[in-house]
Length: 172
Image 1 (cartoon, helix red, strand yellow):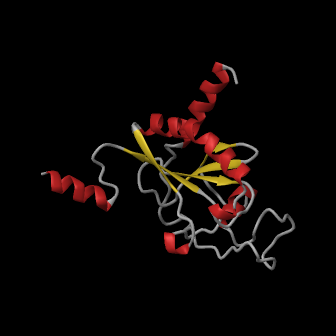
Image 2: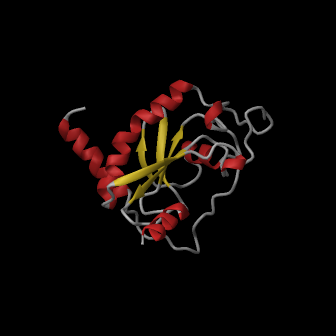
């Protein structure tokens, strides 16, 4: 990709990270999905999607989302319940219920996009760091059973995690 094309793509990504304010009365709540890898009753015509999966609906264009990156393998959208400004979700375009059910080639394709996407997010939000997070399974906090990786922008002393608050107080 030439420099000008990369610059334009970065500008588009950055502009999507600061979307217009949405009327809180019209926002759609993301619900849990009971997708399972062995469930065939919920399959739509395309076996790569599940009818009740919110991410499959977004990928098919049947549900709204703020897209910040898309290619043949994956899609990156803004989280509807962000932990910080720019909190994004990287999602494979094929349905896999959890990371351990996702083929290594798909995980590799997703992870190869993280430097590009995270740099755009950091630039747009003014953050200098980020967390990558995968909640794999219900006990780990997964509520949408379609593989996804959280990219969570961070700033020094933002105290996003409770453990950081304790560390800060123990030093004082």
